[in-house]
Image 1 (cartoon, rainbow, N blue to C red):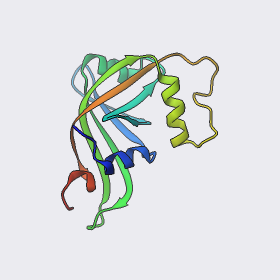
Image 2: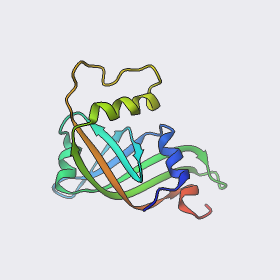
Image 3: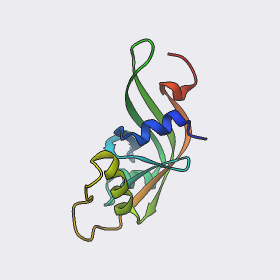
Amino acid sequence: MNLPDSARALIESGAHAHLVTLNADGSPQVTLVWAGVDGNDIVTAHLFASHKVRNIQQDGRVAITFESSSRSAMGLAEYLVIYGTARIEEGGAPELLQRLAHVYLGPNVKFPPMDNPPAGYIMRTQIERISGVGPWTGRAV
């Protein structure tokens, strides 16, 4: 699915993302992450094989939400929800984290703040469905 320009702009603005993965028992696991766009995929970086990385390796179904600072015509806070399938790629986490740090923390920051960080993992989410409240839905709210 193609990412609408309005959704791309929200993600690239530095809106924090809430990533929902599925635990082995089917219960949700939620974490706050930095996210970016690569083509039509949503990308996040993870230095270690954290709980969310292991969850995605077992079951790639995810939901990612982004809250906008804008309000709809009805006064509701706008938000974007992306449903998709994620996959884990080994390596590249420090480079993606550095790129995202310029968006989330500022232009002169070094991140991760350590020498020789581990190669880590990149999570790449293929978008299957978009919802929420905002121009990316294609309907007035």
